[in-house]
Length: 490
Image (cartoon, rainbow, N blue to C red; front, side, top):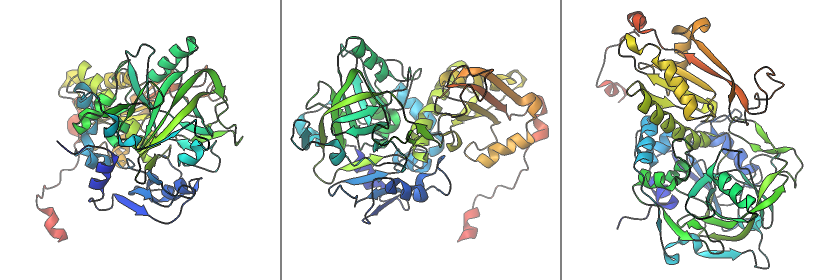
């Protein structure tokens, strides 16, 4: 049988790639310092400059957590994600699209086959305290508290006919209490929680932390690509060509990911809410993907924790900086796949590739590479932009470019705006649409005519494609192709 695929097997492979992994034994404080250090080393994304693309980091000496390691930045490079998936980083959107269409569903395993349950701490233990068991870092000194930023929540509807996995920001509030932000209308878990709340029943869930990137990236797919009740662990199984192992919870009637490093079990409590910054009163939550501190939510849903389980041998707490390149990989690549799926159905062969760049945090911006074959294709590029908006309501800006433009090179993309674009005719503005509430410009006082409530936005299409009938006037300078150019560097 093939070796079991999990975070540890991925890290063993990553260590063989130069410059992609680094570990340190220097002591680091999980409160703000750990994220502060990684900001310089490899965060990227929309993080305040200076930052850069760098290796994934393992901190072996975490203050207050003698036996725990903290991993950060595993997915904070698209090229690294490509290497971990054994796939060209430029076509990861297509690869994930294929994975959604050909899922490998998860499988149940026995307790003996679940390293996540090697050590079990129950809430009934006298000294139980999640804040001492889980080395959740605090991103900045203003944060509402320590956050689980890349914990996969697994839950089901009441009759157990549908299950889902999603990732949410979760703050440790007390020794057995977590505040969870479930974006209204945005996630299947939220629909399940509403069902339980209406029945005034606690909803059993598990939170798995320390996972391979196939699970964490696969889990971020959303409707319409993965419809209500579609369990995204099937996507992860397809990416890695091995089913995800699940095991029965120790204290709740729900499944957990058997090869995770940590699992938290508990219940989303019905009709109970908590102020996110109840312990700090900073008014802030944590830095979110657009690059700004999120406002503390006055009424988060509450998870009552019943157990923490983890591996015996130096378990790995995994963390993500909200505005980092890691978020771009987790949110952006599945969004690219979702857009490709919809445009392939509607206008096959016209959108060659899609990239959601760091400038939009993986969610707010898409660059579409358009192929126009004849004059009947003129205008199809704008149709593609509208399809992108319908595939993903949180998208705000679409840039359309021709097939001779490298969508992964922002200088090349912006070049099209300077040489293939006239603002008076190549801009489309779509006012009064729904968008992502974490964009701070989406508030009524910013634009009272179009934004009635927080989370609405005007959307923008920048059409940087050349009109088909003028194509010959926009041919790029053609250089000699030299196949063996690298010999001049030896």
